[in-house]
Length: 143
Image (tube, rainbow, N blue to C red):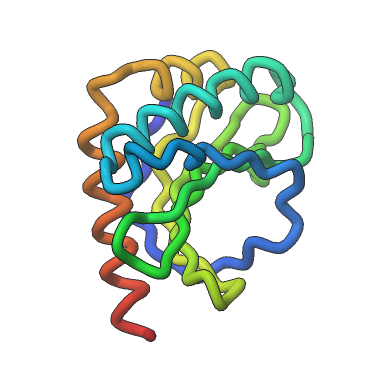
């Protein structure tokens, strides 16, 4: 497992299929901890079902609207382009609702098992919330 260094970049959300939303409960509309926790829960279920142990596959994403902003956060799992046989990548992307550009942060490069362990570890939620906030602020400076 390799925890990736900070990587901020603009990417496009185009090409990500079967995106799942995790933000459908109104009583928690401003609780980032709830959103990230629910997103990790949904993402873990999807990774378990849709991500093969090796080889290429379509990237999967789970998203939610960031409270009190015009931004969406997405947690995305895709195959590693350099070594698709062995590795998967987990990253966070933040997109302004009126744009297809995304600011992203790569969280982890590892096997399917390592990605699932990271997602299922509740100790990673505070750091994920921090990354979402930083990316959202970075994106807001452009709008």
